[in-house]
Length: 204
Image (cartoon, rainbow, N blue to C red; front, side):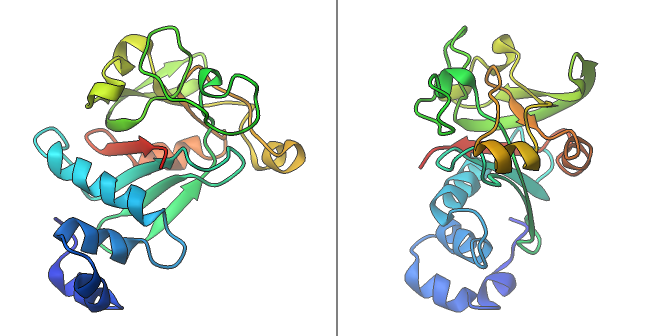
């Protein structure tokens, strides 16, 4: 991995190594300091990065989506694997995951026509320009998101995602299962999380 034992032992990493049993646990504990993503979710993401190392060409950054948090929270994290730094963004979930529009993911589904969000590891694919403007294709790497390509689940921007909506309504709008970002965030996110990298999504 990019994060070395030297990084793990610095800045409290030694304590993490003494408390956690596996290398993946130790890396997760280091990255999860200072309000970073849920360490359990991060640990699963790091395990997925190892599992799919044959297809994840670029491992400098990873995306982590925490579907255990409400839609008005900054729950799309882009984590730098070299130093643990992260940037967090708003992201909408699928309407099929939240049929009453309460702002929380109540179910995850891989089924075509479900309009729900799916969990698992995603390979970030190529750009295209569609009805939402600049977007990026995704490919599901796990059983629970194997239909991502057929369902046309992608990363795109949407007018129903913004800090103002989150603040005023207490929740974002809903997608058809895509990772929908604020229009102000789509450019920076796509630049940072380019093709050949991984997104891991789950509800803990």
